[in-house]
Length: 211
Image (tube, rainbow, N blue to C red; front, side, top):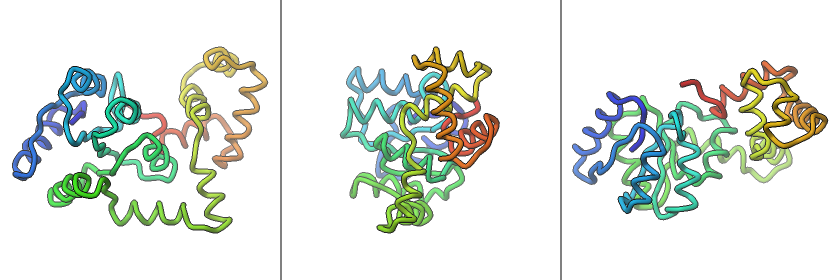
């Protein structure tokens, strides 16, 4: 498991060991440490990742695992359960979502569930996903709005910095007019009117996290 909060990580590891159904074989404070250990041959059945970590966050780590160790089941610790964050994490291969305030029995059930069936979704999460994937035009539009491209995510991250739009264009390898078009499309897609609005959406949905 990876979480940069040492006390929480140690407490969770002790709790998981006490379940008697599995054992924590590796703890780390960054996703980078997890990927390096797996690349070295320490391959667990389940990885529990905190979404908000330095160096390599939970999303980036899940992407790496999806590509390099797809047999590893990923459970994500996150307080973000918006449609944007759920779809983005599902695309990264995450098999289940856990909130840090869940009851120990739910944590145990989640680990058992992801090992037995390959996934774990709470009733709350399942409800959100069902509403997104319902076969009607309104829900199809909601799903389209919830899905952000890699380019849109990159722009949102840079828009949350102090870079000018011209500097954002240089970072992304685009001309300034293309960045203006991308920004205006996101204004419409995310229903905001300013750069501050974009930043608020990015923070609220876990696209950008505060360390």
